[in-house]
Length: 411
Image (cartoon, rainbow, N blue to C red; front, side, top):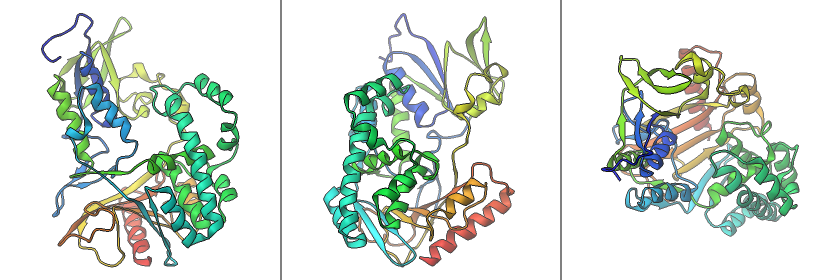
């Protein structure tokens, strides 16, 4: 595949070596195309990146893998097995959740075990409600996975046909209801509403503004959560190695100045350092706002509809560091909830940093209930933030630091 060029081979340049750019590149080079990936930073992975610490590289982006079959399909398209390139460990405890009143809840890879844990926390009624919630979201996930989640372009017609074949999908979708409203109708315990409402933030949304349909994200975790040995960046590195093995080229520290056209067709990419990369096609794996604002040329400012970039999704404050921890028994995936259901999202809706934040804490070196390692261990903490903070970077840093670690001290 690397030594022969087919007659229909095209020179394809991909802007951005994030997980989307790497995945597109791997599929294209496996199909016999001549592919180069241009990345402005000095490493691949995009948000799937690491920072150096005394305990080794710590993740500063995604922390676990869900929807494993997506990545298995990716490696299969290149004639390889995912398990031959990364070491995955399935988590029995999907996440450990904490509240300031001292209560906590583990959710498990086994539905019945989760139901029993919910019964201890919230009672039999909410345990039964959780079983029904799981059935409903599984039905939605299975119905929408192919026409919406696993396709390059969501097919509204295929979705409509699916609903006609399964009329029970319509009430399960809870149309015209927000996720928060739907959960309030299903669970008595506000802690469970708060917990399952967090799934809206997985796509940068608020449970008060996002459709009830996003409850199906629960199924992505219920189907399995895996850690990657060495950190999530190992997955990006593995894709990059396989891409290069099949003949693909990755150019790092390559900042794009503009896309070049001739006769209405793309001809190449001009880089900031004066180099030019010829291309018959370009795949853009960056923020679509960069296109509309003309950051890589004025010919693409109308290429993305406004609905694709507005309203903006939530941002985040992220801390990645090594430290010696004591106190609460952490697992890999931990969530420390704010005191109120909606104050965090009310603040975010007005462009303010949350005064009552919920924190996600990844203890990268822990698996399920394993003991903490000797010496420093690696942590990543994420706090939701508004997309356009009104504060200066210095002031934003100060607020984020104070509110993050104050919340941890209160737990």
